[in-house]
Length: 321
Image (cartoon, rainbow, N blue to C red; front, top):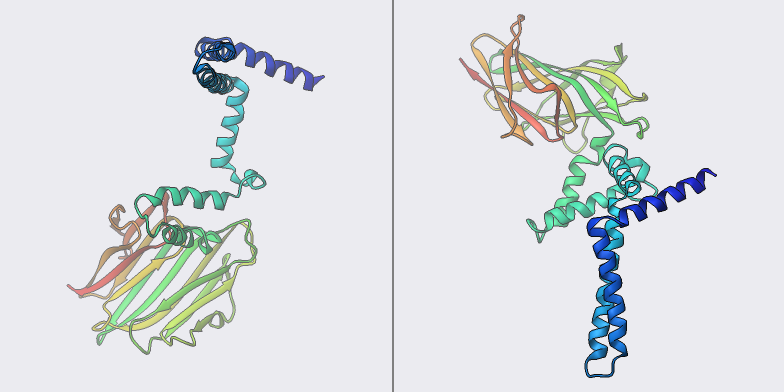
């Protein structure tokens, strides 16, 4: 009974819409065009068949336009259309059985880039996908803070760096690896993992999770499997030494999405730290500087409600006062 009511209501709404304004003109015009076309084809004079055929074909187009206009103006179609648009933006997983969202994204990106990068738009699409929709989606950072305590003596910088952030894990990823890499442009760098806390719980034998790359002796990688769901707090502290004369800077590139980010640093007397924007979004990013009561200078990369894209970076340049 309910189904019959819905069908009846849909039909009545369609015919009600069809009887209004422009829609009615299109439908009546299409019928008249069809009738006249059929009548002309019955006449016995030269070109009658051609003119009649043109009118019949034109009537099909006009009738089609009228029916489409009636559908577009119907409440049922509007509701369905709005629902589909809402799901595209707010719940694309529901469309998974009908539409491969990733494939459609590639098609749309191809279309946008084809005019501006006609020869390399496919490569550009692949690079965008690789940069923003690959491993970067396993987890992202919130309430991100990077702290540097720098002590200088005999042209050597002893840097104690603490990373503290809430790691929000993608619900579709099982046990993603928390990875951070540390490298130097010069030989003999030694990176020591002083502390590692996962969910406010200290991890025993933390240094075992910090490994030197076999092919690059100046590259260290911290790797820890996150066997958690939703959100977890991660805090780690490393310490390393670098030459002030050869490498008077700290260069950082962040490969994850970040919601809310602050960098803070303190340095020995007689030196100062200059903050330089780098990486993605350099020219459009506004950095707010400040200083805490404990003497640490701060730079806010993103407010709590702002988002930074993968590839965001910064450079701390150390100079004498």
